[in-house]
Image (cartoon, rainbow, N blue to C red; front, side, top):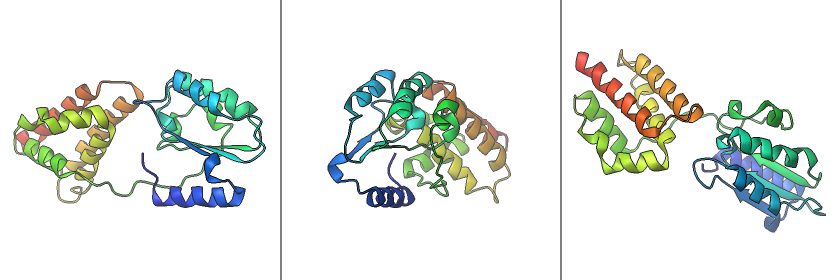
Length: 209
């Protein structure tokens, strides 16, 4: 997850307002697909609870943290020194526990307006629309399913959003992709299963038309 323009501006303003020096700014992101309890505990060990100067801890993609990991972070949120500031960056605050939300201030900085669609993704989608399944097992797909399956499905979603006015099937396809992406994010369904289901759905839709 990269810093967007608005999130950069917000952090720059916060750092300036709170007079936080660069060596007291700590940025973390998930070690794997999500923050684990062990990673949260390791981060907790780094936190200087008796700090005499402002410290800023930025946890990127915190909404990937499991409920157990979020619970493990609650004590830090409840007991930290007023000299410590935590910024939990998320794409979807609804994935956070109510107990985390109640101890946080929600600031909405960015809404996704457009997504860059990789040429390989476009090629894959268009091959499915033409009745070919051969690109489903390509090295490109294998790499994306391992690294960022959520983003791959987001590219699918925006491809059909761009076709909304000209393609009568776009609306139902977008609903299908959104449903499958939520299953991937919230229900821990395997990326391969969700991806295959999405591709076969597209294949069947255009095969009928």
